Length: 126
Image 1 (cartoon, rainbow, N blue to C red):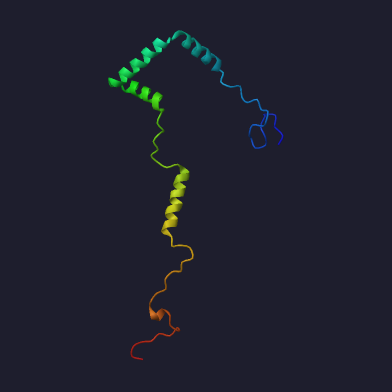
Image 2 (cartoon, rainbow, N blue to C red; image 1 turned 135 degrees about the horizontal axis):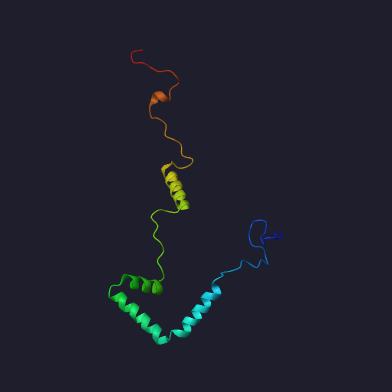
């Protein structure tokens, strides 16, 4: 496929050779700040900060505890109260199929002999 003037192919995807977007305009500034912070904060400073965070968490500071656990264990996945739409569809289909008789099954015929007759009905006393 030939790229369009926007650098995308006919399906809207990035075409080969597309340079991409301008990137994060604040990335250079943020990197510069990280470098300055790393130059100023010594290993001893960092250790003191971590020790304080641990002490605060142990003392019951819920924010310190949350920050510490997020960094050690990663943030927990959000709790979903409801299934995703695709899961909902699958649940509906599964329940529908479970409630139906198996394919190829023949419904039972009435056991009543009059239903099988030759079209004549007998009446008692004939």
